[in-house]
Image 1 (cartoon, helix red, strand yellow):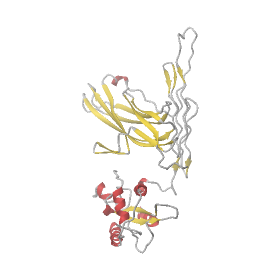
Image 2 (image 1 turned 90 degrees about the vertical axis):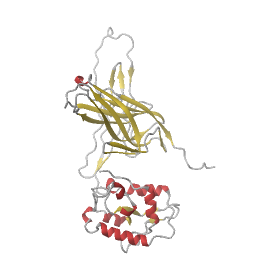
Image 3 (image 1 turned 90 degrees about the horizontal axis):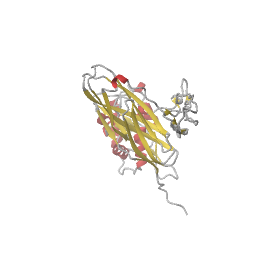
Length: 381
């Protein structure tokens, strides 16, 4: 189900036309001012008159996504009444017609001079308006990410959990175990050995780094927490060709009617306030797959692994998506789209490499420069 965030311009219009809760006889202020603060605190939420998705109350399937986030479908309520009105079990008590009457009365009492709202407040109002996308943590079951392993090649620890029936996430797998038996006569020259660095723990509840790869000659043992590819069928390797055509980080992305829509895409830099710091992004990958003289109906298993490799060769994240392409004709072409929600912890500044690999051998690498945001505070004497 597509869900569009409310525009900041719409939020500004809402708070410019109301000062108190729309619930009848409720005079609770929408904004709360505290001594010592230069900007107000949100004492309200934006409620959808008709829900933004089928999960919410008063959903109207005849509306478009733009209609659902429009000014006319939104009403400002204080915190208790916003929660009450958005309970699906009380939807019959608060039909859409009732909320529209409340909004009309609220607009009649619009202030002569709209308040000045700082940009950060508008952003927070947008985030909190996402309703069923967010969690009510009072009754939530929360899984916590585990820590990355410190020993080279070791697996990451499992995540913790809070709440009844909660189950922590599994730890990352350790690297493959190899046993070597050689004699002095068999070893000619030097054997390059590289011990992969161990991963580092996460911040703010985010996953930590996965360990680096360990190499003994031509044998590579993946670091703990790193994804690995399944073998591509040998019978298909000569008749299937693949190429990673593009990969883009984005603030927001979705697929609709077979097309990809990206907002704030094409990053080449990423800044954090301090290190270690959080990394969050949407990542979109396009893979071109062509085949020649294949039996129609044959399954082509495609795996894509994405990693943000740090300057020390560890991985900020390591994620894998799979798909099956079933050709309808003997010769053909298809562009497969993969969407990833990637999160992790950044420990190092400098050039990181977005490494995109496919089980067919196709690969793409591009740089992302990680930096520290300059402080906006004036230096003190």
